[in-house]
Image (cartoon, rainbow, N blue to C red; front, side, top):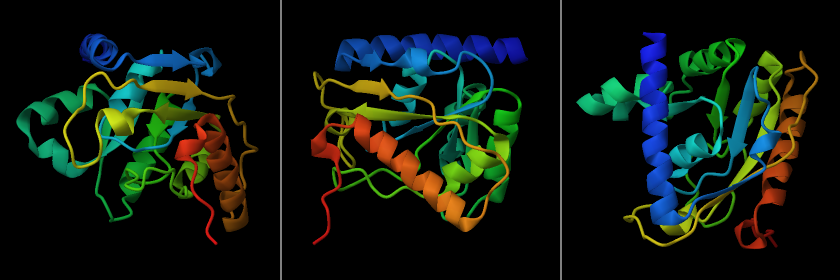
Amino acid sequence: MYEYGLRVYYNTKALAKALLQVLFGLEVEGAEKIPKEGPVILASNHMSFLDPVVMGVACPRVVSYMSRDDVFKYPILRWLLPRLYVIPVSRGAGDLGAVKAAIRTLKNGMAFGIFPEGRRSRTGFIEPFKTGTAAIALRTNAPIVPAAIIGSDKAWPVGKGPRLRRSIRVVFGDPIVLPPGKTDHQTLEEVTRQLEAAVTALLPPEYHRKPTV
C-alpha cells in the first residue's frame, strides 16, 4: 500500500508540475537548501488556492499537508488526498488531532508543509503568523525552511478563477534550526516572529505588510 501510495503521489506531482510550468511558467529557487532526508517543515506565505500544489511541486521531497476536512466529502478527493499525504483538519476548531498527526508525520522523517498565516491572505500582503508552526517545530526538533510563493495571487486570486500566463515563482531560504524543548509563550512568539521575518525577506516589497500608523 505504501509503494502504491508513492506511485500515486509522484504521478500526480508530475502532472501538476507539467501544468504549472505550461500554464504559469513555474520557477523554483533554492530547493537545494531543503534537507534531503529527515523531518523538515516548509513554511510559506499563503495567497492562493494554488499554493499547496505549487509547494508540493517545488519541493523535491514528498510533502504532507493539512487541509480542511470538508474537502474530503468529495469522493475523488476522499480517495486521492490520503494518497497525497494530506491530513484533514477541522477549521476553527483548534484541531489537536491534526497537530498530533503533523507531529507524527515529522517524527516519521517526512517533510511537512504549512502556511503559518492560518488562511489565505485577502489583502495582497503577508499576514501575521500564528504560533502553531513554531510549536510543532519545537516539539519535533524539525528545522524550518522558510519559503516565498510569488505570483500565485495573480495567477489564481482569492474568489476568482485562474488567470493564465501569470508567472509563479517559489524561493526557499536557509533552514532555521531551533533548540528543542522550550515551548513557553515567549519562545513561541520569538520563533514565530523570526520565521515571519525570514519569509518576508524572501518576498518582493509589494507583498510586505504596510506598517500601521
